[in-house]
Length: 219
Image (tube, rainbow, N blue to C red; front, side, top):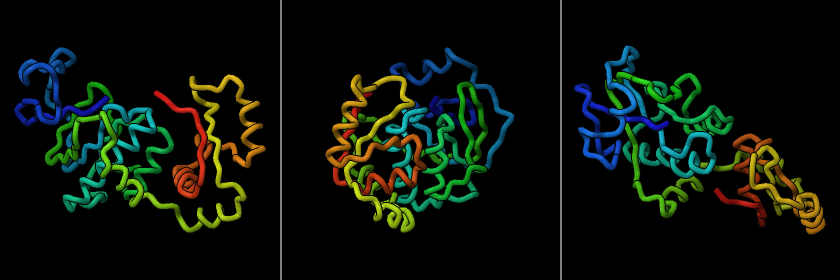
């Protein structure tokens, strides 16, 4: 589900496509031939990352911070680029990308076996060390993603700043005695919230103004 950049002569750019095998024995050769592509693009930005597909956490922590690297390199995110994304079409993907000026029309959804001929490819990439979330990535998210004035005004009339997060659409991680826990927390002033029913901007505003958050978590 992630991109594999190669040179025009079909050699893998190994720094951007690490593997346990040497470059000439990369495991990608076992999957499909690196034949020439018929789809050509002038300029593109590769924003793929292994864990981002269908995972909100990895999307927000690993993919979105790549915009910081683009900004640091003075690369403007505009319609002169196409954006290669390995997402899954979730609503938060397009909404969060729009936050950084990427329109739906400029998004190219990648898929296994996809071949593109890109004349100029930009691949923002940070450390492969996933043992801890980079501090600069968290700082960037805090600074770059701000609640809108309209959303803040709407939340000012809300009496509770304490949130109880539940995800009824999730296939796992359900609280066995959910109703009992929910009733108990509501008596303590907590507001039960299903983030999946909110837009990306609404989620940002709600969490940025919260004083206390209770939720189950885990991979």
